[in-house]
Image (cartoon, rainbow, N blue to C red; front, side):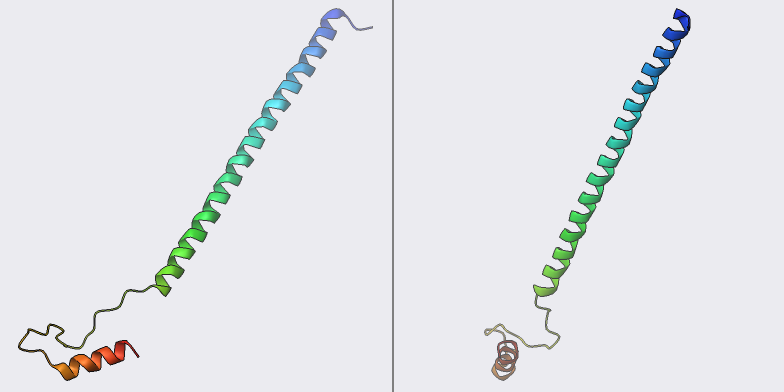
Length: 92
């Protein structure tokens, strides 16, 4: 039969091992949870960026026309024929 001191040492080692295992498992779980949250955030962010890019493609602002059509009717360079041609091209 083992002495009392040896039994105390054995039980203390067992309790220490259980405590270490519990704390180590909590650390692993917390790390995995943080990685999962980070992954979900990055996934959502990439979807948001993709949606912004698609929206920008579909809603492009009208580019400034390169032709020199004066749209101010009070201007001396105003040409009605050029203006009507431009409007017809823009609105088929």
